[in-house]
Length: 463
Image (cartoon, rainbow, N blue to C red; front, side, top):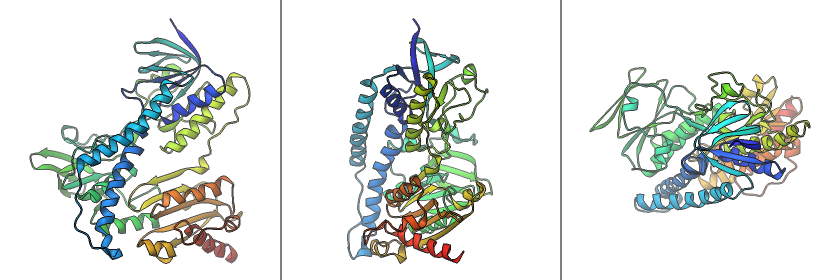
């Protein structure tokens, strides 16, 4: 028998769960279809949360090794790998249980199985038959994107999915890729005691932030003994009893005990048969507007399968907007709920952390704006000097004609946490002058935003 709903959400991760909650709050009948073997979503099970649990241990080991810089003499610390795994598992089980209860006890119907569109308003779910929806929200997430390198798929390389299980701490590690997963993996294993090499096709090392921030991270990696190989791609992989042998595109050969592939993720769209719903065939990513609406008006999308930036807070914003707009669409009202792409925030939990909020200077110019920016270093800021930060800095960017803050970038201790100060400022469209009216406690790391704002204000005075 066909089941009918006002809304069918395909995917029960962060974006899909947020969408379903928003829709049921508006009294819609909702089904959530989840095809994963385990409930919880990528962030909880294999992404944000387990990796940060592992990185916390790595960072503390590194801090102990660097304690002599603060007048503390200690012996070389040792890692209890089983205790690390147990701590991570305990934490993740708690996060997972909370999400599973929300899915299983929510005011929507949870349907376990893989969905496939058979028409614009119907899907077939394995073991459940045909399901009809007046509207749909696609929130299927993403999968690891592994290039077709000769020998790679015959070798026991690791991805982020493998790392969260922490099979071992290899003596030598090569990381291919310099996005969030690649950089965090490199710092994770360096902190745990591995000798690490990062292979990057291009320079700068981190392309999603201002060049000066990437340069600062390169210096930090060098300080930590992480080797950087630029301008080369992985061409061939061989694996034997002695580990991995890697041939790179410019003739370099590397050997390691473990290869980590961190070459990005791709939207999980295979098997959905989106062409049956009215989309173009062979779609790589679902395009959405500010209302989370797709090119098929009754179908919305949220999260990694559609977002220009694959981060949880945007997935939630997109999901909430989609859930609210579905209700408006069904009531034939204008779509009013939006997700604000101005507030993009991207963080990498290296040691120290990297963050980008809003636009870089280059992106602002591409958008037709007239940006002006200034920077300030932590080794010239009170609390930054106290905590011993040697390379970190922050950059603040504003629009020249209005003074409105449009972006920020930085590398520093816990900089992701206090970058929310800039997100709040941008959400309220504050100018640099407005921002400087807000007091900051002294001495704090977050106070550095006022320092760089003062530098930027001086630049405005000269124009």
